Length: 330
Image (cartoon, rainbow, N blue to C red; front, side, top):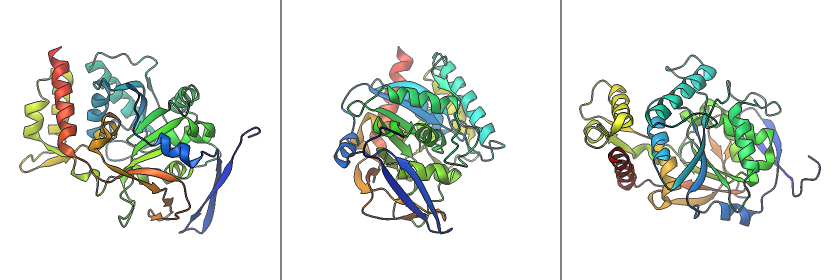
């Protein structure tokens, strides 16, 4: 705490409970934050990827997309917790996500040593006692080696637990990272009961309150139309090596009836923003206030974040299909 300059206190009124949430974070000059929220110009983009990989099937596509994109330098992959019908709890979800990361890396002939890390075993319960998971500690170490002029990009596509724990353990990293999170809904949507956001409300509050440079990809109604179909997957993904066949297998296995059926591959869009932000236009907006009833409140005196407002679906899939095909031919 001693020696920090420009520290400020953010207070969020939790409107349902009437309680006051207060946590201290380092100040970032607004001009600096806006500069960090511009699309990265240095190539390749240094990034880490935080993913609840076994939650459904879109994380696998996003992980492959990141690893086969020469514009990106993926330095680590973190397993995020999740709890749905594919896990018995957040810890089990994290373990299954870690196993799925290893499965994907194996099909890409990539080593997991020093690259894949287990994340939180539970959701954030106490902001004064964040979980020191291998993922959170690795993120801290990599962030410390970065700086505001060359930040580390943190693409996150699950509950934001690992990232928020890292910020709570070492708040100073907010000056050296940019978080690109697929989470929450549009700011004018009537509720925020979106899977990534609502799994860990305290962690979601941290990322919106901390002042960390944040690019938000809202799920409904923005990313919801990033869909594809079985015929398209069969045509452009199947037969592209072991990884292409695996992606097709899990895509087809996700739903029994394929007639007139399409599937949104949400998580690929976080990677796509890092590759080319023209595919995902965005606005600078004031960071919303996370309320206890899973809605947003607004205060235009709060710091700015970047929020994606549209997704150009076709060029993203074109880019992914082209890279996957090129890899299969090499």
